[in-house]
Image (cartoon, rainbow, N blue to C red; front, top):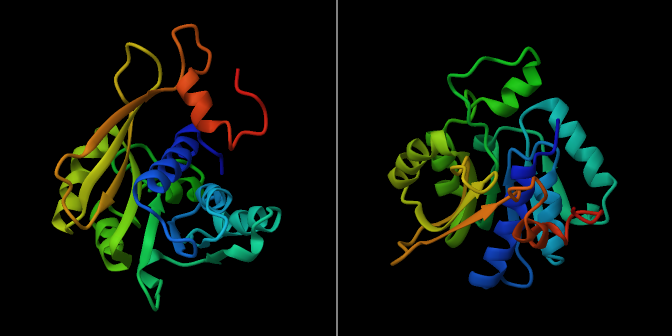
Length: 227
């Protein structure tokens, strides 16, 4: 499975916003739903050195890849992989922070690779199912990060509202100046925000180089300098 730029943006922006605005405790638990390669779990482990990260992944091949990536990291003792569907995950206490880069295609052509189909299509984790599970697993004061493409955003908003999940912050991801946003990343809570914050991020400049804002956001996570 490939690592996407959008997922990297989600991990970096979410970690920064949650750390700055939600006052995370020193010792807490994070849940990554559908971890895939383990990217978001690893980014959370890097950003929050005292956190325990639980990562759930249904697809066996992806779970094996995540396990390998965890073993190669500096944070193995704080990373815990659960190779199961999220509705099968049981916990003794709700999570104060949940993050998910969910599958989102539901009408597009299927990939010939069944593992890619599971990762990209929402047959096994619909927007309604995700909202239900987040409502079940998230603490009363907790925060939830999710990313959907612009075409799926209105359907997700309906599913979230039905489960009492309220928008607090939203980032519109724009490929380059003059283009419309193609992804939305957002933080939700179980309490209503009086005025949700909305921001935007352009990945590239008109010249095709990485924007200053994107480079600043990602510099703590990318090994090489962004040019």
